[in-house]
Amino acid sequence: MILFISDFGFDKSKVIQKEFNLYYFVVIGLGVLSTIMRYVERSKEIKKTVVVFDVITILITLTILYTHFLGVKAHRYISFLSNDNWVKFAIIITFIREFSELKISYKKTLLNPAQLFIISFFSIIILGSLLLMLPKATHDGISFLNALFTSTSAVCVTGLIVVDTGSYFTTFGQFIILFLIQAGGIGILTVASYFSYFFKGVASYENQLTLSDMTGSKEIGKVFSTLKYILLITFLIEFLAAVLIFFSLDENMFHSFSERAFFSIFHSISAFCNAGFSTLPNNLYETGFRYNYFFQSIIIGSLVLGGLGFPIVANLVKYFKYFFTQKLFYLRGKKQTHKPWVLNINSRITLATTLSLIFFGTLFIFINEYHNTLAEHKGIGKFITALFEATTPRTAGFNTVDMASLHFSTIMMIFLLMWIGASPASTGGGIKTNTFAIAVLNFISLAKGKTKIEVFRREISEVSVRRAFAVISLSLIVIGLGIIFVSAFDSDKKLLDIAFECFSAYSTVGLSLGITAKLSAYSKIVIIAIMFIGRVSMLTLLIALFKKVKQNNYKYPVEEITIN
Image 1 (cartoon, helix red, strand yellow):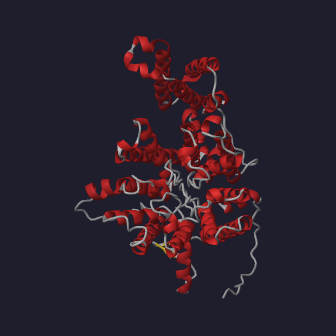
Image 2 (cartoon, helix red, strand yellow):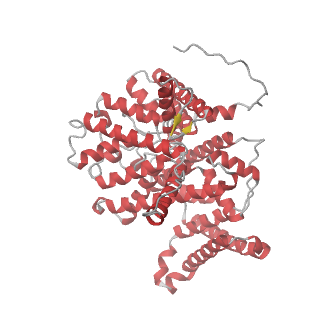
Image 3 (cartoon, one colour):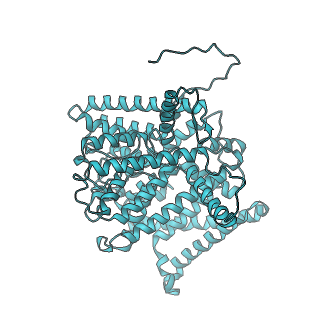
């Protein structure tokens, strides 16, 4: 892997490149040999799905090797495989296969799930920073602080940038950013754990317990099926979005098919992961894109699905399956005696809150900006642009209007949308829709004189209410401290701009009023810290820091405290 990174990251002479290629062929050969030897040693333990994977990858690898040595002269139809990049693709397959055979064991006595989660994000941020500093990642080099800022923004799927992504970074550098966005969006532990389970078919109870805490799986036995769902949903939506984006673009705006394809893939992953990174200088406000409403609609769809969260999307898939198979086909004309609870309470609250925020946000921006930033759009374009601007503050970070030209009241509305953010277990940040919903339901419950919160014929547990208000309080403390520190380090900046930047960083939004690149080194460090805390959540940090105490079997007399 060190040689692999060196190959991509540094310029080399032809002699050294030949040595690298020779070593690659040795690695590929050993990879094929080790895969075959596993079947000789433990054929009964191998699953059918693993056999299929191994057969396909060995055939691909052998075809690439054949093309490199004989293909160009022997068979002109596969001569395109003689490109060095295909050898590197074979190396990646070999690495995935061999790395998945390693025994990964999480020791809860050493690291609890919260600590493991935080360390995994911190590690990938540092690795990303070092990769972005490679000579071939940028055109003119980059400082460690700016590399750290970019890496943190990508891994925390924020989208705040100190240098222009499209012009400052090479294609290799943009690939690194794309990898960091994907790793931060679905979690590097999710991918590593699932591949390890896929090839070995077994996992320790402790591993499953740890992963169930991190993925939110209610049943330990279903933790790997949950991981599979997460990966399938992610890659399927990103693939479909990339295809739709590709066909929505004007081919005359790109120099080649590969450039257009990369643009589609980059923005598909960035949208679904709610990252907000774009290779365009002015984000999606760029000429030729701000009026492409079909393209914007695809981005909106990806943002919403990514922001809903994996459990909600999986539950929606289950509901639609029930709706089409049962209601439309089996129960047509029949009286339904039993109505199953297919959409769970989390899905109902999340969907109701998300749709309400999108509706009222769109309506407010449409009316408020009709003769301002929406004036250049006509007909349906005004509505789609308003919808886009109501959706993107909820942790996405793309923009199709000039942010500096927005009315003050619109910016205040964006503050609220940014603070609320996306849904739990999603790629987005913020205090989350369920937290906001519980807070609102609590207000209503108190106003009615009720002692419990009830919604959709269910009662919200006391621990959920406590967690919700802890998240709200901690978010305001972190954002408030961030504003104070940045104001101290950059006293020449406007308070509105600083507050917007801190809210955007904490909620991993990525929108800015144009001061990110102008911040001092100390302010950048503050924003980096806020982005990291916003992604892993302050509550998770506290859980990681404090040791759990045993609950003693006693209860003090209950007293009411004067509040108002």
